[in-house]
Image (cartoon, rainbow, N blue to C red; front, side, top):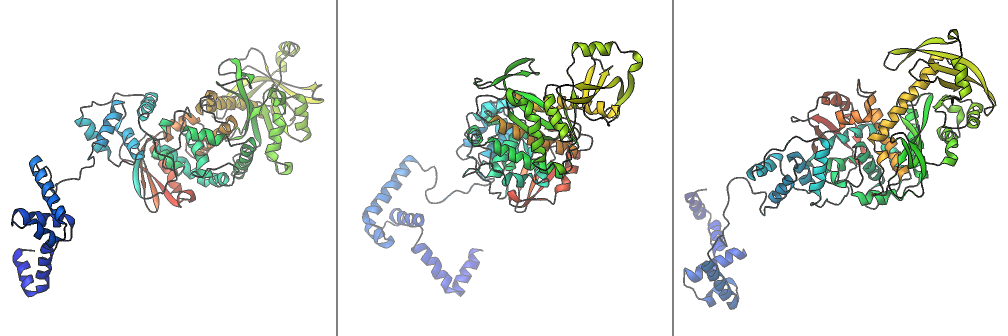
Length: 600
């Protein structure tokens, strides 16, 4: 409004003029009042007594105001004490230089721009990658050299030593945007919801804390397993990542001490009850066939091993102090249905009966299992007879004595039968077999024995079974598949780092093993839904699909997850789009949309 128009309005409307006069003569704002008082003293020459009476000051306050203003004039006014200078352009984000100092500190540790962005997001510092890059560029830093994944993790740990991670707390899911270097972990959430695993966790007997719910607690452990975290004590890798926190509906995952404290409250009964509930899910969804492969695996322990027994480790080709664990895996789906790390030498032979009771849970009539496949040292002939009495068929390898080997070597060539055994990939191979019935005194009955040669072994392999109806081809193939499963089990143990259990962080191994089983099964379900990848190991699935970074945008109704470009991303998005209308109760009933980012 121009001065002419304002003057015209003041004449036509006297009230506005009076208000304007009152505004200048009777200031209400403290700074305005001080300005008028000083102006009256220095410019109009009014006395201090008159100014005090006019503006409601004490006389000493007027003298003090005049004295302070003169002192400021002597030093020199850098900023106007009454009128703020308005700066044009964008508002300054870093008034004190703390963001710049932090970015430079992280860059000196060879941290990339996206990693720095993720760390700043965890500290609730909202700046863009472009802003971070401009700071780095002004500071004169060069581009980082190419590094492998292990070097990147190592530099991240070293950098985070100087930064305090925020305390883990429940995420409010208010609208915000943040970056994550482990955003691919969120791709498992649709499958957790689809199979009702979240409900199983919530109804389990696992403990919870005052700050972290039962569901979030178990998802914390599951998140680390799915993310290929090698050490629980390397918490600097995950305690700054907002994406991993979102997986458990937390701002960030808790630090190592929480995991150790929580694990100490978990009992074997809790784990067994949880596995039983998962067993019902696998059965309900047709993920368990009529055959189950059973095997022992050795879990080395590098702490105080006084309470442990020596077990043979094929990985290290020697006996060492370790925990002996048993697991049962379906050969078709790859699902591990059962696991126990509390196996001792004195009760190892009875683990097959314990699994049988676990599988049936008192209801053998509705059982779908028909075959148990295991190696020669897994159990005794007496326990095999117990399986036979319960109408359970088994396939196992018989130990080769000298007399048995000599007998097979002396057989005439026309006694051997040539068969063609098909592999899972559609290909096959020719082998020679010799079949006969043998009486085993410890078993108390006759068994069917199948000798196999022509497979590259020096001595013939001996398969024994109580199934006299199964064809030679099917029987041989069923046991040969166990060798493939055994190799797969070894690979999974390596991926989930069960053979690297350390004493530096006390995590109950049986609980850790239970979380490993759940994580492995999620990988199998995930892979089964990706065309052409159902046969791939967990390590391959992780590297091709899960190991990815990106951006998370939380809105009032949904969560948008933007994954960075990868060669396999279109296959992944095609599958995840099937869940776009699915809501997640533990995430405030929001939907999750998986999108492709424009960057790689």
